[in-house]
Figure 1: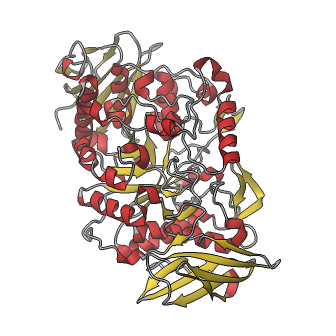
Figure 2: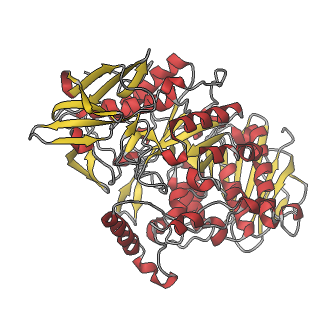
Figure 3: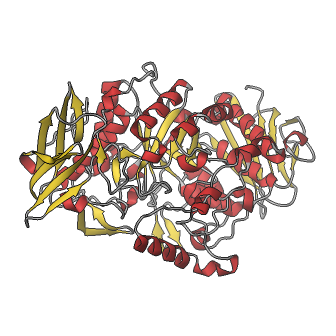
Length: 619
């Protein structure tokens, strides 16, 4: 039986003192053999162990060798398949696996202990479209840009091996294998080392709620899926049905590998509401338990950040409060309220949001729907998260989903004017939560971020195309949805780095730089105390004042989303207020600067579509 070993990966192929150890979970096989490409006519049989595991120790398999597994099925059929725990798939999702020695990489980040979660300023990116090269090496060349911007943590969209060379990453079918076109496992290890050398933490997006359709051979090995529950992608991954122990161990091993062998600092776990587990110990809680033990062993703090659509704080509540112990979660509702306030048409799931009132609520409560009736869902929805600290929530004005799931993939820069982009930046970066930017946001990237794939199965390509057409059928007046399979769709989604030096693009980048720098040195902003927060609004206008404080320092963040100048009164908590940031000042592309200082009780004229930041004397 497989037992979790904190010190090393056990599942799949691993190397120790010139020996390869092979451990495969295939409970429904009658036999299992290893086929090495150099000698395919000499299969090496694995020995059956308890609970569906098969084991082999051999000196014939070396790092870099291509190999497959020969499954002897109960019906007598024999199937050649890649290793479900493969670390490298140079030949794609249907080809042979490539043996890789995780321990061979020479790390140079021994002094790196990570950064506190509350210090995370996140930057989500897609490796394939972030640079011209579209790989880890291309990303490394742009790290200095992120450092100069003030980012403290990059968040990589999924890098698990997917079909072809173009994909968002959520169609991965080898959770342990690093996408070969990005640079494979060694490329990722090198990238992480470079990030740590520059003071950047690395967050990796992982998918534990489904497997992609193409190259998915898991059913040939065992009951990785269960018919008890269904998800938008088909049968759910088997976390609580018969034989679920082997599946649970598989994913726990995956989590530990990223932290231990790739030195990843945090995992962002995709759509955990689609993980179906009604056992006595939820898989997320068990993952947290092993993560905590690994952190004690390594001396590095590892974080688990989830995406959840349930507005249920049990995911982020500690285990002793009957929660799953996740460290943080994305808050889509902050995004939705912010976008409607900025002028987004309230259709679809945006129809639940009324703009400023809901944005004000999200600043206070994180969740907007926390036990109130949702017209869009047609039910009462959510629970309050009043006791969860601000560092447990990640907020943003755009991300890969909110951009890429639009039919034409328009970014904020295509939908809003330049002045409003600065207001959105102020709302996110002055919030009492962890801020996240989406790649290119900081210079108003104008290229879209579209949905793209490169499947080899034509029937699957047709299904994806038809699915996208059906999803956007009501948008026919806006033209046809871009072809997801087309390489042109992918190329149109690449960032235009040359924009950084041009006009408003350069101005916005400097604006983000300055605002992030202010956030880092202003305790009233970087101390994420949700209790030290007040808000005021202008009745019947889209204008809000966010008042935050820490000890003697207070900050006032004025956000005017309207097309008209609005009037607000300076609060009386401090006698004197000094301006820190003014989006309408000429230096930031505006036309008139607001007063440099004001006294308590003074009236402030907040310009249309503008963001203002004032502080008390104590900075």
